[in-house]
Length: 318
Image 1 (cartoon, one colour):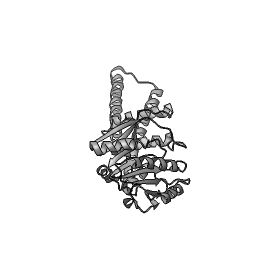
Image 2 (cartoon, helix red, strand yellow):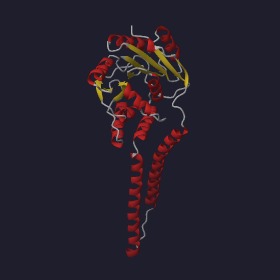
Image 3 (cartoon, helix red, strand yellow):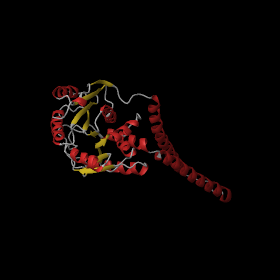
Image 4 (cartoon, one colour):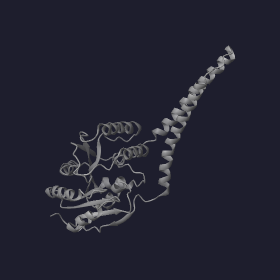
């Protein structure tokens, strides 16, 4: 079978040689693959990543690459790689080797021999990460699964193998604001997962800081759930209902008992409370409007600065 391996790269110059060596060695071991290509997607790297990729291309024609005009993000890199891939089976993995290449054999066996369309991976633990990051990640999965009809498994990663039918379905979803983990779950098909122990990066640090992770979380929630809009409307109704009851109580006391409600601080607190709820609701609405605004612009998901001419369809393994 023809295997395509897609690897998004952003400032990964220090790991590419190791990645190529380990990955190609693992693929060569598997008799299921008569041909393969490794697609390296340079996501506007600021270091020497592109030149390193070109160097690998000179050594092995099975290396393909795409280089973006600027940094468009990992989601765009994944989409570009899927579009360029030609394999009957397609693997998506990170460049830092935290996704163990040896799992490719197990994933291929599940698709070829057990008729799965996609095999994802789930980390058994988050060893090597800070407790804060692990806690926030766990809470994210709880929140998005409670708000969305699309279920994303806890500790699911982007590392997976897909058959061509599954890949083509993913490519049909060409929205600008992409949340690939949700898309993989949304398209359905016959899917399964395998677990693995977390592995340290070969070199360098994670490109995902807390701000980027927060933005990514918001993207996921907004992309696959309208529940925040419903909740903000419900909260507004509850506040209106409670305010109406309190107002009626005040009027009742004034008419029948002549009591004038005192408490300037209470009024101020009420104003701040209602103002905060209004701003929160406007913010939620703004998130959805901003996504709609970007979608209707119909801008491309990414811009290509340069890419290799694919010759992998005529180069066989070995």
